[in-house]
Image 1 (cartoon, rainbow, N blue to C red):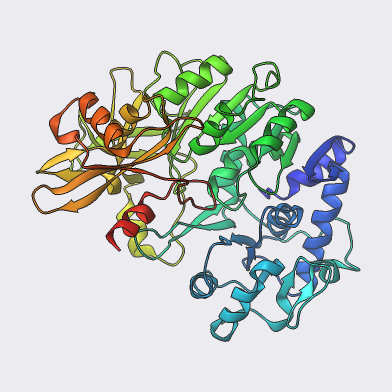
Image 2: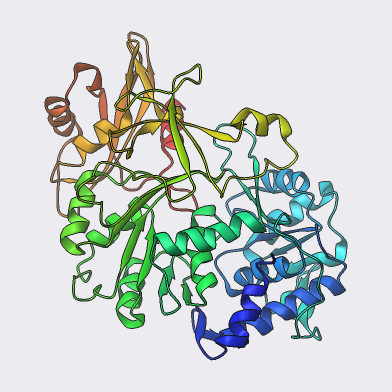
Length: 506
């Protein structure tokens, strides 16, 4: 099983179908396959082959998409790196992943250069830059692939167990871990998510978030599996999103909650302009009930929600269950199993909160070079998520909160999401994030950060009082409200509560 050969298949049987759109480039499958083959052959000519790792430090661009499939064809593994990494962070992960080559862009070359003296495995002639001109020590991407054949590369004997990629965790709680996905795991992304989200060869998928994070593969893989159309934009721009959905008749889109909120508040985001959408998938963090209700009014019967870990377990709230199980994050897809466990690993009955434990066909084979961490996380084939939740009598999962985000106040577990649900109901609140701060009396106390809706004003004290009047328990009362102009976010668009907490702590 070689996933890279999917592209060759579409080039044979759907050659003129527009497969990939990026900015002004519209490539049919024959043209995209030629670019993939050209890079595959250039990699081989450069000494890169089966089992080698190729890193990228790139923004959303066509070359990044080509790399994913070109590396797969020859059995090499892609290692996408976050452009937000410092030179020290880059050096750490480039060495940890044993990469032999890196492809970057001019805006990140300074960090690469600063890391170079300590990089162990990258040859001097395998620093490639996506640019018209190459600074000292680099070769341009066009120069690297120049002269390479666009014919199918040699068969490297790639199997389903070969590594497709290494995705690094965010590392917010320590050293980032390299999460390995094999060709088999990614093929399960292709088939299971295509079925679950109702993709077909005529689907049109729009992706506007960073394509280096695992969440991007939830829609990328089924689109490429079907030979459908994949539209990649440089970055999230809500004006362009609305325009593109209408112009391209987009059927499938995936967003993190902050992006869905931007869609809901956009003046041109009307039911008529977005009528082609068949799926709006929310992932990365729970979407609050207030926003789910707004989305249902705007686009009835299109909402899906995914809860999952890059390590390989997911639940999915189907669009047909989205109203009946509105507070849930869904159920297990086919071939997945789930348990809710206490601290001793014992199964808990429906309705009781415990750790979410799951298994399924997308389970990672390992953390790269970390067997110690692998056996801590995967026990007897079950992935221990570290997240807290419960199931109802029908087996639907309700995510209480990330275990690491839980606040312990006066010895009582306080779940930030419960407070976020309440704060989001205030007419002045557009977006909310709750986290804990140290407190001499209670151990920790909840703090609320908010973004206000345009044209709305309220003092922090009045909003704090309103929230405290509406919480369901005394231990949920918040000590302060912070009215902010913007939230710190990761390159994937996730709100970084830990950064706000650290800023307050100094």
